[in-house]
Length: 130
Figure 1 (tube, rainbow, N blue to C red):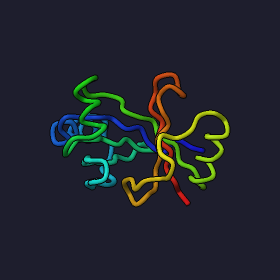
Figure 2 (figure 1 turned 30 degrees about the vertical axis):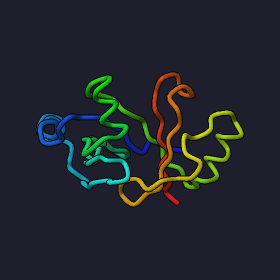
Figure 3 (figure 1 turned 90 degrees about the vertical axis):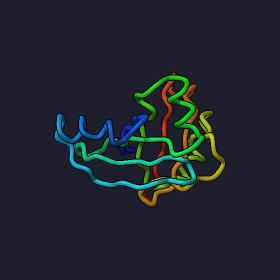
Figure 4 (figure 1 turned 180 degrees about the vertical axis):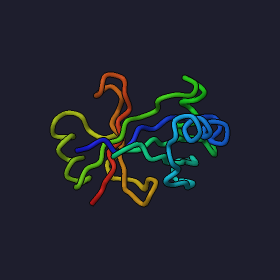
């Protein structure tokens, strides 16, 4: 696996984006709404990985995160060549994904999440690059 992206929860992409583009010099790579997760996302190029800004568009995990913790690091995502096989391997190893089946994520990828308890407090996302 390799680092795919780091997800950062923000209240407003419009207010947050200038820092990443203008101050850090990161280029906007992708933007979309992900209705299944009630978020709008933008990805910024950051070397071989990227930064994902997540803004809630309705009630869901990101909205809850912002209410409880405020803006900041939401998750770390790793790319895998065979998401379903990785999900099965992790379940066998005692770290089962939150989902039994992959779900639709951004950029056309299937994704799943691992409970933060398995990574000592960090939400981990697996991104299928099948």
